[in-house]
Length: 146
Image 1 (spheres, helix red, strand yellow):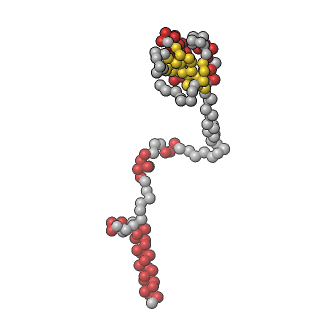
Image 2: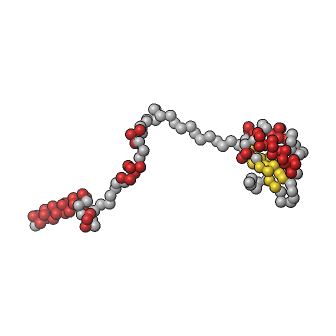
Image 3: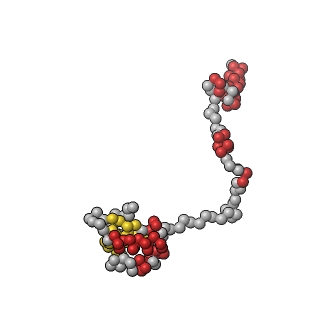
């Protein structure tokens, strides 16, 4: 009886060893492969990577808070007034900081400044000199459209 028990353990151990080594894979038995050789082939200069301790490497700066912006719009203008304003804006304002919107109720235009930061707000007096009425008001909450 002990002889049969020892022989069974020996046979099971040999069977497990064959399975673990992958010798039974041609017969459909064996562990799944845990290798990813394609990732090794995709590496670019892996020898250039060095691991630094926290004391050796600088920490990245915290993300900057977004700069506060304001949306302003002008009153209605005719085409001649809009051309004067457009010439001033094209020469000294970033193109993404302004837009001239055609109004649905007629051949009039409205200047819209959708995202004024502090630097652009300092330029508003120069712009007010060429705007009809010279005043800008807060935009409604419908957001800018181009």
